Every structure is written in structure tokens, then in C-alpha cells.
Image (cartoon, rainbow, N blue to C red; front, side, top):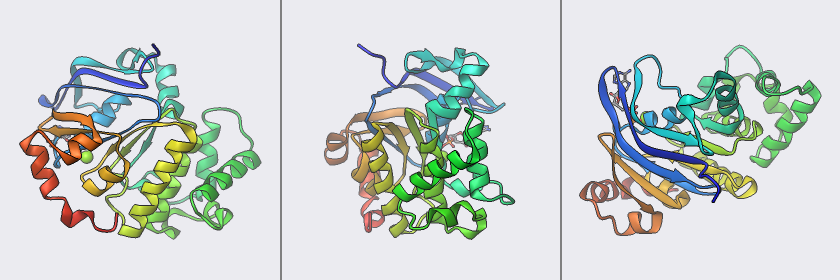
Length: 262
Ligand SMILES: Nc1ncnc2c1ncn2[C@@H]1O[C@H](COP(=O)(O)OP(=O)(O)O)[C@@H](O)[C@H]1O
Ligand SMILES: [Mg+2]
């Protein structure tokens, strides 16, 4: 049997000496979308960052492992880690525009990212970027490439961030509240684009969201995190329609207000 794309096995992490993840286990297969839900502070972002070994100076793995295609992320040599972050595991942040420099045009920055992971001419990176932006519903990709980040709306910036992530050719995508900062129309667009990317590229995705409407629209499986522990994990249809855990029920009861529009 081939290894799962991502496999967390009893992962425990502390930040600044405080336990933040405790014994977290799950696996993600190619083509699967796993939504991670839980209240603020439950460890969702930490769970994603652990897979990229980006826990920062305060972070410490105190037990367990994260494997990417069977390889222990915490034992990867530096060069493999660069590949992992560059093109193995793509990351989509809550505010994608914030990770672009405000001073340079989008096309320049996309070219720089692509060129850092393989020789590619400017003409080739512009062509690939324009194709990807067109797939992501931008009617005038050239205009986006010659824009500065401040010229884009939040929803456009989010789709540009998704485009850059997909251009790197990841095998799996980690998305940290990718729709939280958006209006409902942009939320729908971003959800649709992520679903399309999964279908077109057979990607595995871990999508952190506190938005149950997003989870309902996207998830094959759902993992519920509370105080760094997994309180429930299973098929989306089971967890979202007949939650076993009282905490999951409370999250779902809070959802109808948020769900409209997605
Ligand atoms: N550098 C840090 N030092 C100590 N605790 C931290 C640090 N960063 C985050 N935390 C704590 O870790 C917990 C989990 O944070 P996080 O993974 O960001 O949760 P979520 O994404 O679910 O809101 C929170 O209680 C937060 O206060
Ligand atoms: Mg977070």
C-alpha cells in the first residue's frame, strides 16, 4: 500500500512550554479534503505549521511524528525541507495578500517564486501564471500580473494566493481559514476554486475553517479539535449530521448564523 500523503501519528507540540497539540493522529489521502474545525486557540494553525516544520523558535515537537509521503518531516535534511515547502505542501494563508511584498508587481513576485524552484524564463512564468489566473476566473490575467498587491481586493488577493500555491505544483495543500477574511461572494468563489483544484490535480487538502458552511461545502472528512486534542474525526456526512461529541454539536449549533451564502 502506498503511504498516505500526510500522516500525523500521536503528534504533540508545545509553544513556549505550553502544550498546544496533544496526541493528534490522522491521515490524508490523495484527492481527500479534510476540514479541521474548532474554536479559536484550539491549535488549528499549529497543526498546519507542524507539517511544514514552521513552528518557530517557541515551538517544540514533544512527541509523535508527521510524515509526508512516508517521510518524517522532522528528520528531513534542509534541501528536502526546501522542496517540501516549495512544491510538496502548498500553504494558503488567511490573508494571502499579506505574504506578497507591497512594493513589487504580482507578476515579478510569482516569477521569483517559480524561479526559486527550477529554471524558468520570465516569459514562461508569465504564461503559466496567466493560464492559472484564467482558470481562477480572472478575466484579464495580464492586468493582475502587472498590478501591485494594494490594487487587488481581498477576494482577488485570495485567488492570486491560491494561483501561486497551485503553480508550485504541490501534492497537498494546507489552507488556514482561506475564506475568513472574505465577503460571501468571494467565499463562494474561493471554495469553488479549491474544489476545482482538487478535482483537476487530485490534490489532498487540509482546510482549517471555523465556518461550518465551508466545511459542509468542501469536506470529505472532518476533524474537530478542542484544546489541542482530537475530539471527533470521521466522514463529513457522519460528523456534520450526527456528531457524537457535545463540543461538535455546540459548534454546529452556532453555525446557522454563519452558513448563509456559502
Ligand atoms: N508563541 C507562542 N507561545 C505560547 N503559546 C502560543 C504561541 N503561539 C500560539 N500560542 C497558543 O497556542 C494555542 C493554539 O494556537 P493556534 O494554533 O494559533 O490556534 P487556532 O489556529 O486554532 O486559533 C493558543 O492557545 C495560543 O494562545
Ligand atoms: Mg489559527
